[in-house]
Image (tube, rainbow over all chains, first blue to last red; front, side, top):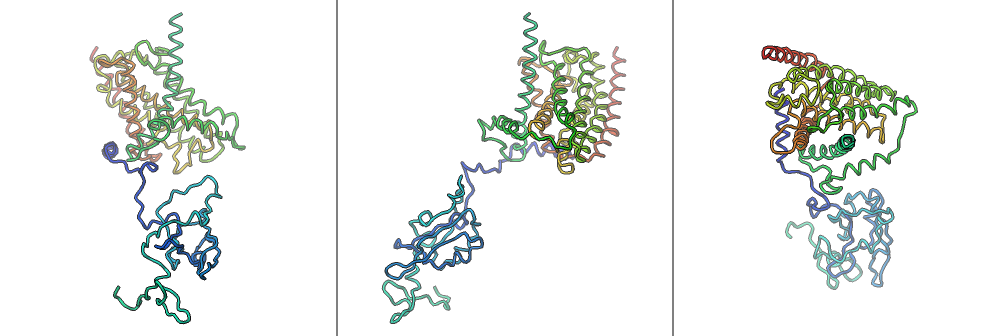
Length: 171
Length: 317
């Protein structure tokens, strides 16, 4: 009996506690920069597309929501002819971001992407490409790695930096 | 002529007032429960979420009105109406303010007991007509609970009747001019409130519908506005219980400065909030605990209260 009265008193005192509800559309929870939300395609610092259409993201995607077609420009550089993500399938696992060798595909903290029509959840390259470099401001794939071809080793071409010694601890 | 118009007006106001009170209570209960659980509750529809019951009503009216093929059709349809009708009938004898009542029966209290006993049929018949074992168990529990707690509820009020010397609710309020019965009849007040909660099968006494064990008990098979009738009936019953406690123990419309009707509404509202607080804090009893609480504690307390009150009343003469 006494315990029941104590319970009632305890509950009554909760009247003066702070309410824990987050009133969502007006205020929203803090989302960390590495929160896995809407997927974007980024550009390198020169404003060129980073994506080299290697298909690794499409291969690693567990729900097969990424579809793209590779093509080459006049310099022989690969880029995606189309790049399509079906967000009604996407589970935001971030595997594509991990697989990407050029930091092109990145996940952002934006999660407000509801649509009335399911069709609108299929994002084309125009919808995915952003104008900036995303999380990696100075990274340019072609400058860092390069490719050894006849008469030129890695990092010897114009505007190319020599490759990092991966066996060294020093930066 | 003017008398008749006034009385008709009172009837309409009581009917409209109690029914809209039931709607408002749905909002109030959700907001208060949220307040005590550190949440907000419905606050989107209209100012402070006040139109939430309207949205709920539109939704429940447009729901499919489904009668299971195995149910006893006629009884199934009639059962939800019984509880609303009996509770609304009970409001007929409640005196809201001097002169503001639908009927001043000299057996008002007995009429109330009769109506609340009839209300038990609603749950029993609903459980039976659903032709579903969980509903039937819920109906059985409702029957046992309502019939046993009817006893203590009646007995607890005999002390009040002795002191007031009348079964008329108006006379009982007027007998509290000096000191309210909640002081002189405190054990009766406790027994009455517990029995009343059991009668309205509210938490912590909602064994007839215990979601965790009986799905939803007697109303498992009900949907749409038929379920809505049970819902409205329950909230009307809460209002009735609070109004009765106000009339019987807290001096009804009596109070300084403010007009009588305001005092009545304030007291009733405070009691309703108390009942909601009980729901927010106490867990549901087991059925055998409910029965032993009733027969082993409340019955002796009520009887002792009658004996002592009777002795004092006789000595005072």
